[in-house]
Image (cartoon, rainbow, N blue to C red; front, side, top):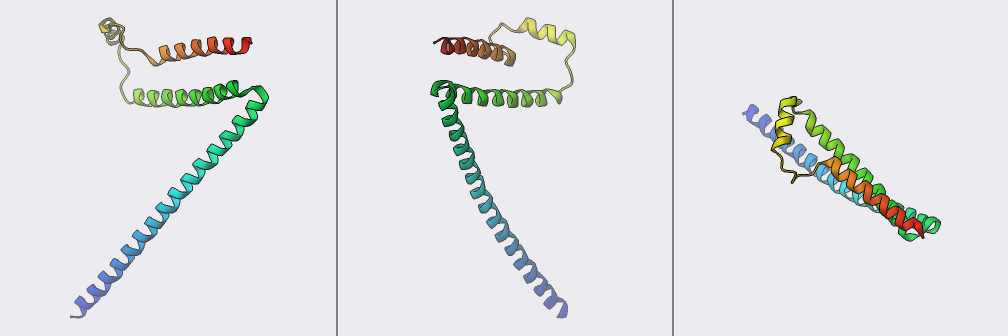
Length: 133
């Protein structure tokens, strides 16, 4: 009888502890989500302030292009890092595999480096045209 009483008390205490832990986790998740929203707002206003300041220095069009270019560079770096991370998990291909794969392609698929070259040339040409005045 005493064992059942102790088991019931222990079970009730455990149930109360689980409920309290779930409530704390829920409260922490809500506060973290609110903090993330405020950090995103902070970043957005800092970016807007940078754009306004840069627009006063070099003009609004070049300021927007510079900010967009900065984000594009960061995105490309992250994409290359993710691509390199994915490639590391596979064993390196042999020379025969690379030659047979290159011979099998018909040129329909582009590579990341080809895309980077196109973006670099387009950026150079746009930059020359904008700064020509």
